[in-house]
Image 1: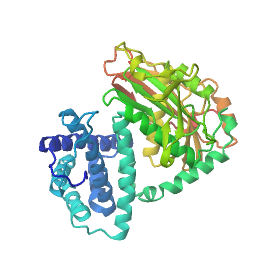
Image 2 (image 1 turned 120 degrees about the vertical axis):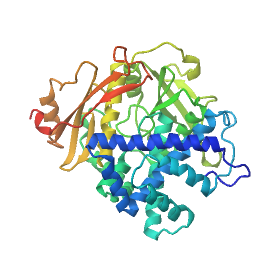
Image 3 (image 1 turned 180 degrees about the vertical axis):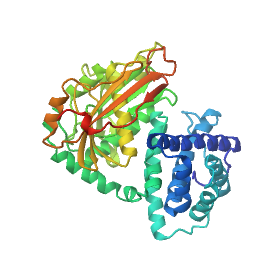
Image 4 (image 1 turned 30 degrees about the vertical axis):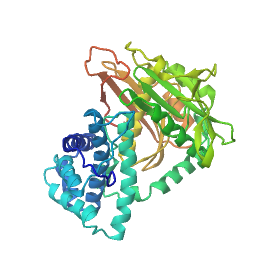
Length: 439
């Protein structure tokens, strides 16, 4: 997992990593169970019956362990932002011991999963088809788990549990096909319904964007930095959004090359103002060996209006800041889109702008469907907007299938405000039937 180096893995860190990974794994399963009213026993039965389900579970568990062991080293003081992770050797016995801890929350399928790990990683007895699936699941699970640890999320994407329960293995096998299809559907949808331009994202810009994201991550303080947006889901108001302690930063990547970068300053300023955050530009240039690098030193960020250098660390304070309505709406849209994805559906487009409806388009069983998202702070309850009939009429050119997603959010201590960055509790029971919407 970490290469062959002389020093063995720290056993205390390994045990801690296994225990933490078990919490993440079972939390993901419980979330799927709660959302779909399916008990864990049925999930474990599906794992016992299917080689593919066992491969999926083992790969997700290994991906989680890969991150929790890094966290364990940092927490033990054996790694630091300056020195990074030490190089160490992790044997198959070490991995198997840790994996048993990760899988300890299972009741009836632990033995089969342990055997599957030996077939996969020790004896190398997989068929070509199983090996191909293993590779695809590894890539997917690494990305899903990375989102959790880099964005400080509580839950790992539960799509993998849905695949196990519904035997929807084709979902992972056709990830690239689904993405291509979603881009085609976005292109066919009339963007004027949103009053937002849906730009094509070129492979050249995507490569530049990835380098920009890696640069921001390299500058981030480990325990105070949280990604709020690190994808290119269209339409785009910003290319990145992140929080450092109590401050939020929205970033557009800028290049001198003609890369047809999506987004614009007006959208950037709008979301930054709505969230009481900072609108920033990150100029990038093509350097030696065709590598994208920031134009400016340090974080490389510039204020979007003054073009003066921005150092996020100089703008932090310990003052508690209450979440704005835009932040709350953005959070609610994330809750809804994650739930739709966890249900095996493809999200075509999403936009967390409280003034724009609908907030989400996805590929449903009946074709394209749209979602009006509304968020409320407990004890208030979300309600449909008064202009729902106008929204419905504007969407009919694409789809008659509308949904309403009410999301209620409260702080862990219900009498306190929703402080930015604090723990929150969410009530969301799923999309309400389309027939509640006026037509």
